[in-house]
Length: 586
Image 1 (tube, rainbow, N blue to C red):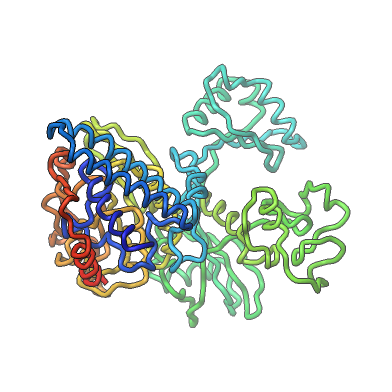
Image 2: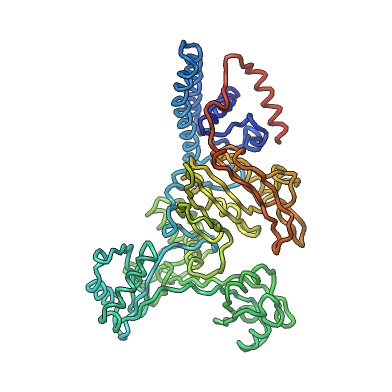
């Protein structure tokens, strides 16, 4: 991008701050972290082609000509201000469109990510009310609602159960929305609805009808307790001895409700699968090893995924496979072709599941792996589905709202990310609470946040998060990779860091202290936040209280607060000043 275009962009950005658009980059020091550090760093205004850059540059030149014409006209100051208001709104739209184009062309970040979702990918991801939120991690549960129905009479099929239920219940008469009805084992069916209220109505209707209540069992599915697999136990232990040893030698499991699910042979002994209550799991999963008698054993969270060795699909076994294509012979799980078994295959690996997904949905999943590989994207989705059906206990992010007069609309609800729209006064606000565990994939956590920001880019926003990221922008520490990545996101979406880098540490624990809890704002001035501080009161937590006061009336911007005149600007001097300023930020 040319120097002139960079300069024009900065001036237009400053003008937009008068109309409630993009915050000024040079009008206050607190926004200095929002400036890009080098020309190589991704810029949301920058398109992929010279044609796109030229269009934006032309729009800025025309805007400057119009501004000059307005200033030299004989109109009064009040009239000139009225004319400038719609002009600034037009330029705001132009800049926003350029940001969208940048997302569309995949310019989110090229330095820290192999492949960034395009704007089209992100906006196509369901992000509305919680029932449609998609699970992408253990902390993000699927927001779907089900009721399972099983016939009491043995030998009944799922199709028979479905016909009976559909003949007795008409959803429109009881005002229930039904997404789908799917067959499950033991001749049962599962009914999916968008809300829990619909499920409650269905269950109430089932209870009213004798022909359903007497012949069928129905209930909401319950989340499973999490489990771990302990590797290479080389002692011959009973289930009772195993549980007693785990409880007596691991303080995290003293009060745990342990249940041995199964065990199977391994190369150096046996692998044991043990389930437990969520509280115990959340404690023990942080340990690198688990103690048992004379050994410290490796372990990890247990995922049992059903995969058919006939068609390679997930969710069923070969005994229950309904695929007509592979009825006569199974597919090779290595190369994805028929005619031989996996152990006999001499061809290069090619995943039949990822290939089918690419052909059907135009995705670009890597296929150079077997259908059983841990690198398979379809396998990852199955793990996500299993995670969504597991009870991991209390959430790690959220809000407590004591004022019942607020109108609250959930945007996204998950264990580590909660986004709410709240209306009070004359404005609508987006409040986001996010937790990014230090041991979890930081990119995945940010990927969950990005769609919320894109789809609410004009809403006044407050983001409160434990990002576990370090940067001299918000604390007296050196920047780490997570801090650099978070700064990319801050620059990407024109966020403002409210934190004072000379404040008390927000985290004080046995391992030390750090500045990892942030308050980020967007679409309103920092003067709307007052009395921000990290409180040093004694807490029953390693994290300190972040205290601040939000003044809704102070977040409104007046068109008369800032006026920009370009008639006497020294472009060379401005460019030199901007260059020195950027050097200080690097």
